[in-house]
Amino acid sequence: MSFVVYGASGYTGDLVTREAVARGHRPTIAGRRREPLDTLGRELGLPVSVTPLDQADALDRLLQTHDAVIHCAGPFSGTSRAMADACIRSKTHYLDITGEIAVFEQLARRDAEAKEAGVTLLPGVGFDVIPTDCLAAHLSGRLPGATHLRLAFQAHGGMSRGTALTTIQGIGRGGAIRRDGVIVPVPVAWKASEVDFGSGPRSVVTIPWGDVSTAFHSTGIGNIEVSIAMPPSRIRALRRSRPFQTILRWAPILTLLQWVVRRRMSGPSAAQRAAGGVAVWGEVRDGKGHCVRARLHGPEGYSFTAFGAVRAVERVQQGAGLGFLTPSQLCGPDFVLEIPGVIREDLPTGAA
Image (cartoon, rainbow, N blue to C red):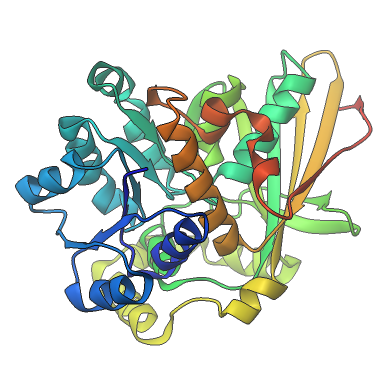
């Protein structure tokens, strides 16, 4: 197989690269900074390409000699368009690990363009959004005709620098849900509730997670909410911050926060990843009062992303589909069960 891991010197890109090598691949590692790429390339015996995203000709030359790219250099709101443009020009399959709603929607609008070029556009091949997307598709299959989908997750293990920078970019924008097929904005910490991930009720609150976009494409369900486990005290604090959302979008504040993240954050250690884990809960309802629920447990989020991204590029290179696709559309709802350590549990059905 011939593929590129772009952004391989970043925290998640490094994990993806190592997982690829562990599975017998020799990807080209690429990005814009030579020193960390050369260090990783020497360690793993991999070819290296220093190719900034704003150099279109050089990016085209790199991709023309490969079948696919796993794009790991976020925030993807600022990097995905250039990479997707180059993939379509060079007829190279595009995968990324984004969880950003706007990026999913932008790539979905390029479906026909990608199909004409013979290219797969497969964003979200990590913890964002493989487990939630596959669980949504599984639930939809259990209750055809469902009209409402709720997803919730909890994750233990810490956050990388790149994830923190992407989160900062979203500060002040509030939340998002899908209502009657349309993505609509809602206030930050819009709806709180409780779900059981397997160890008793936990408080959760809505966030603008990627499935607000992708689950609609995967299932056709028009009403979607996604929540994250959070202590009630933090939910109350988020709600109290609503009057200050405009200030949090102010460029000097964002720049300061980004500076702090770059100085102080790296990512979870190997020990933290080994001790961490994720849990996902889902529920679908229809207009007749039927309700179906399921949940799954799996490895820590960044380990999940490394496993998922490599297995997804293997599927793409087998010719599984063209155009814009979600992980469950390309690989089926049981794809998540291929990730080491994932267990899925169907819960008793009942009334909504």
